[in-house]
Length: 139
View (tube, rainbow, N blue to C red):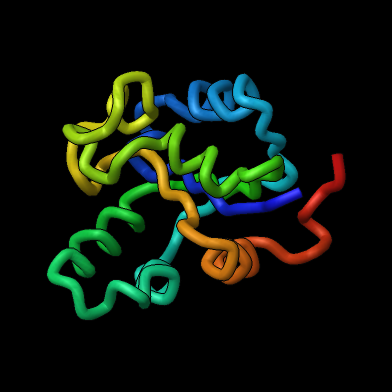
């Protein structure tokens, strides 16, 4: 079974979309094996998104990610990285397919409700950023 990290971003939490996002995961056979709500500090957000440090959107992205609580979770299932990325839709919600989380709920290219790891290597690092082995459950 493959694992990946998904985050419901501050806009998804503040708009009451946690349940809707989880419902979409579960309806598509994805298991949630770890989940919590946290409020990142600026230092945490900068560390998590360090790969984007040189990009022009880095400061606005990290400022947004500290604007309210987030819900990181570990998803598990067959081809879960690809499945999650398909459910999320394109980063630019205007280009996302109909019925995807971002197409249905995003209001901005940054305020696009969810984050998802893009590869097994990224997933491993991102899961370790938020969760220790005691917080990950077998289902």
